[in-house]
Image (tube, rainbow, N blue to C red; front, side):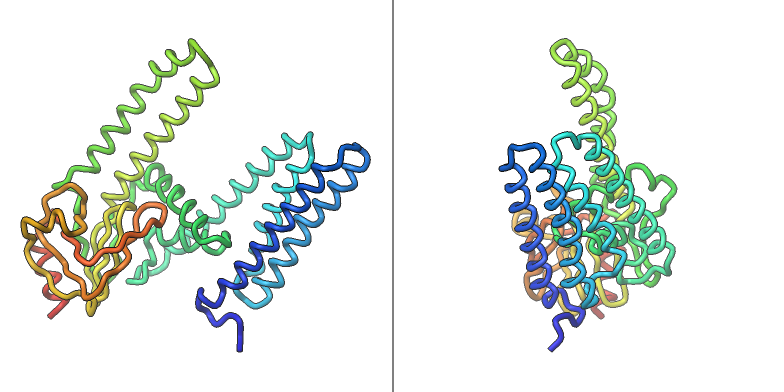
Length: 336
C-alpha cells in the first residue's frame, strides 16, 4: 500500500517523522557543541554538528518527503538554507553570518512567493480560489514549510503586506461564474482601520521623542512597531474591501477580508432567512458588531477560518451585507 496517494492524512506520519529526526539532531548536536570547552576540540565538534544539521537533515528530508513525491525536488534548497542558518548558531563568532543568511532566506522566501502568486493570479480565475492572492500565498508557502501552522502564520503576514503595499490598483477578487457582494460599506470597519493607521503614523514622532529621553534604542523600536502596526491596519482594511462574499454556481464563499472565511457548498445550506433579533447573540455575525440582515443556517456545524488560520465552529452565520436584497436573491437562486 503506498504511503502517499495525494491526501494530507497519508503524509502526516512522514512529516512527523522528519520533524522528530530534525529536532533530535539539532538538540543533540547543539548540546554536544555547547558541552565542549576546549577551542580546538569545539571547532571539530562544530564542523561535525554542522554536517549533521545541514547534510543529514536534508538527506532525511529527501528520503521521507521528496523521494515519495510529497514535496518537490526544489524544496531541498530552502531546507538546506534553513539548516545552514541553524548551523551558524553553533559558532560563537557567527553573528554576521546569521544576519546575512537570515536576510537571504527571507528574501528568497518572499521572492518565491511573489513569483508563485503572480503565476496563480495570472491564471484563469475559478471557484477553487485561483486568482485570490491569499490563496496563492498560502499555496506557495504550503510547499515550503513542513509545519502547516507556520505556513498559515507567514501567509497571514505576507497577505497583509500584499494588501497594504501592492493592492492599490487591484479590483475586488471575483472568480468567473461568481457574484460578489461587499460587506464593508455599511459596517465602515475598513475606514476605522485606515483612521487608526493614520493615528499610528501621526503619533509615532512625538512618542519617539519622548522615549528617546530614556533610550534611543527603544525609541526606534517603538517607532518601528508603530509603522509596522499601521501597515497591518491598512492591509486588513484593504483586504476587507478586496475580498467580498462570493456566490457561485454551487457554493457560497463567505469572506470578510482576512478576518473570516467560510466556504459553504449548496447542499450544506439548510435555509436562508431574514435575520431576527436573537441572531446577533446566538449566530456568528459577519462583519462582527453589526446589525445583520440575513441568516444562513447550516445542515451541520462547520469550521470557519480567521486570521492566522484560527478556526471557529459555526452552525449559523448572520450577514450584514451592503446590498441585502441582492444577496438574498442570489442565495435563493442558488438553492432553487
